[in-house]
Length: 254
Image 1 (cartoon, one colour):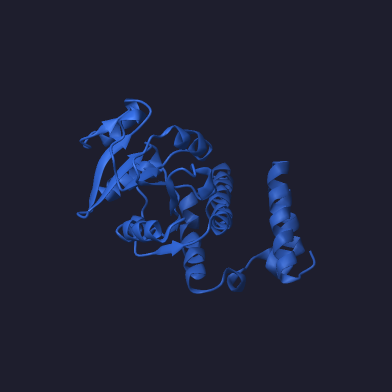
Image 2: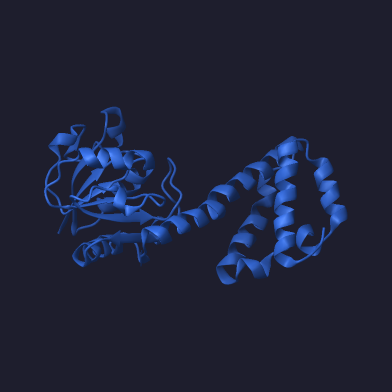
């Protein structure tokens, strides 16, 4: 039985709470948050508290809080021997105090107020200083996912960078596409099949091999028409920059 204390009440903490509570060989003994209102989601927990000085002894303490608070909060914790891990993709393991056993348990997924659709397949990236701690983290992570990677802080930072391109920037492109559709009385759902096909292709082929569109073809007349249709200079700049990047990748002169 792995005893776990969860510190944090945000979207990642909620996902971990829901997942950990379902595991028979994991005992979530405590949830710790800054104020009572944020603990409402965890009301079924027997020990949801706001007092960080009353943390119970555990095997693993999971610090699922904002990146810029990890160093400060971790310094204030008085832990009893357990392994302290954070869940950030962009924060190095060594920001945690070197006076404790430390590590990282990073779920690579986008989290919002709704549960992730692909929750069962979320990859976990783990890191620890000692082999026994890495083994413990691997056991914990494998109870949550079939995909667990042992990677360094530097690798994780680069993975997080890649994730920003793959998810955050892509979602912003969806926002811009939705805006164009709304401004022209076109249902955004019309693009759904295209979006699904694009996503499917990159699961079976390298993204480089499945690129299409006017920039890939070097179709300057279509690119010019599109730029004229865009009303905002920032959107024109984004369109031009992405087109130039595609052109540079495939060697076409626009």
